[in-house]
Length: 139
Image (cartoon, rainbow, N blue to C red; front, side, top):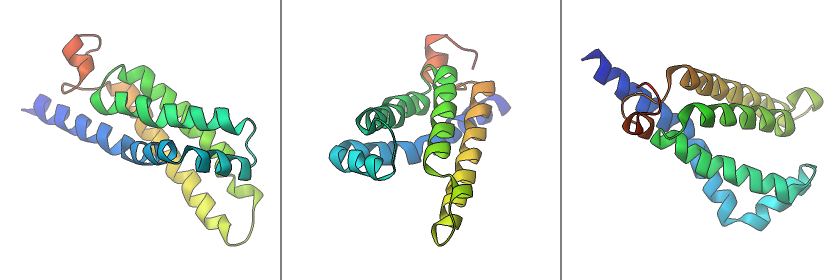
């Protein structure tokens, strides 16, 4: 019984971890030019490349985590991506005023998400995943 429950919990955790990325990745794709403009406004170098990377990470890589395909390497990619976005977009320590708390909250929210992806790297995708179905990782 515990093994089935563990598999369900890991499945739910995978889905919860990537929900935000899938929603906002789809939004970035649908408004590609607006996303590039936002990257320019945020002062990111190579905004077209940054937008393409963001869409790739937030859609196919997050989807891979959701369905449990290549979960461990996908989780590592999401750790690196989330850390990168935190350091690029949520540098609360460099600002003051009204945006300070919002940036600080987003930064620490991202650290929490990174923690979830690190745990997913350790546990693997679980019983209810493509990894388990394909036999490429222990459930």
